[in-house]
Length: 267
Image 1 (cartoon, rainbow, N blue to C red):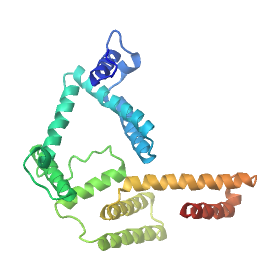
Image 2: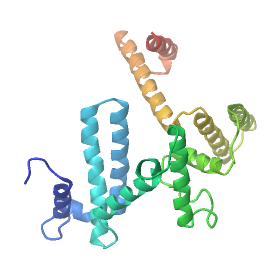
Image 3: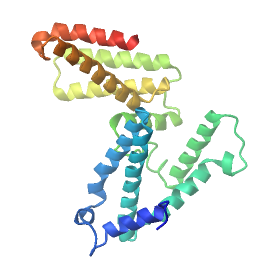
Image 4: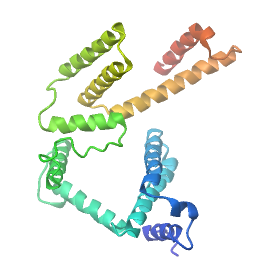
């Protein structure tokens, strides 16, 4: 074995784990569907390592994510669907197709034109697969994506065929309109189904606003979640210093400490 491990070594380890006679009982029991939650979890852990600027953790999590790719490829190879080499060949071919300004003769002026070329090639790929036209512009946006990410992808698909606002002001007006409809739902004491629809429309409009502002809605909400966690931890710490614990009876103090936490962030 070489001192520097190769992808071939990882593939061999995975094949051994799935060996019907000498493999691991847990690995042998798995299928594409049972492994899927782990694949999604590892992708999110990669995202968290990036957001935390933790390079050691990122290295570790990328390895875990690579294992998921190898695991899926090994199971596919066992049923003669495709191999890991097919996966690598496919992505190499795709990268060359989508970068004609690097691997071809196309000249581009800036990153925006690169993005336009990339999207044009993706649309052509979908057309070759009979996704667009025969089945619709929005076909192929994965159902398993987190809702915020999927909303943005649906909106971008629609925008490619001109179904979009020209100015951010129009999106802001839509957000206000959806918020007003939520208020009307509350005033009318509408049933739970109607409330779900109106809140969903409001969230969808907010994703549209984020897209027009050049903000990744999923990342923005993840950042907001972390800020909330940090601030609330400071609220709890402030209460502990007073010999108190969170609860309805100390709501006023919690709100005061929340304000302090926000001020500390700004400073």
